[in-house]
Length: 245
Image (cartoon, rainbow, N blue to C red; front, side, top):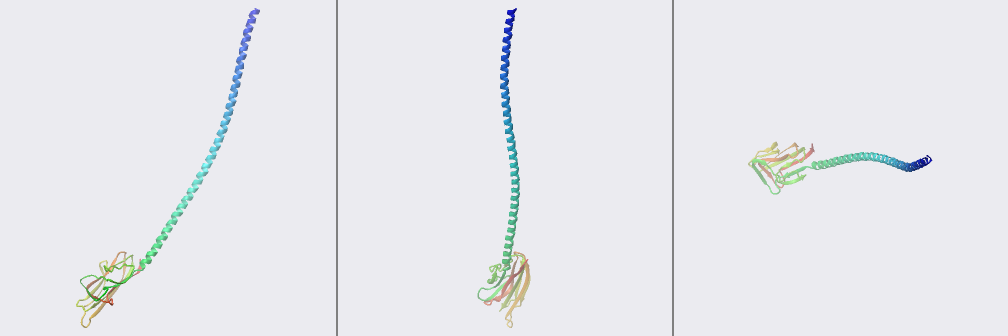
């Protein structure tokens, strides 16, 4: 029995030793796990710190972004105001240019006056058996160049009120003289005289009118019969602008 007990004791001792070895191994493993847990906790703490730093950085970036967005909005608003001011200045400048141009145009348009006679040289009667417009080729004055000595027409440069006068002289003629002031092909006023006689060898007739014209209207003098002109420029056609409308 003692031998059996000794054998059993050895078995128990071996088992206890094995158990203790296993416990020691488990303790070692536990220490490794504890160390690993501590490392993981430290890593987690570092990660949390990094996340906190990242979150702080994100918040800082968001604040900077918001500040930049606000600054951009203010800049855009200032740019819009500046563009509006520039546009307003351009409009004012354009208005000033237009006003200056209008003043210049008015200045130019106010300088409208002409006077012309029929013959540039020599003397004699001009005959139009069938009434048609006279061409006054000898230009005495033509400020603005709105009278055309090649056609005999005056063209109104702008809408306004104009004064026209015409004078005809007849001499040594067996035909009467009739002069008509014509606006756009229509009779306005007339001046006329009978044919000359031995007792009345020369005659004059004249007339005039104030006309309201639109830009582009034309005015001329039409002759029926005979009219005389010489170096004294007895037969004339004159006009000038009184004021624009």
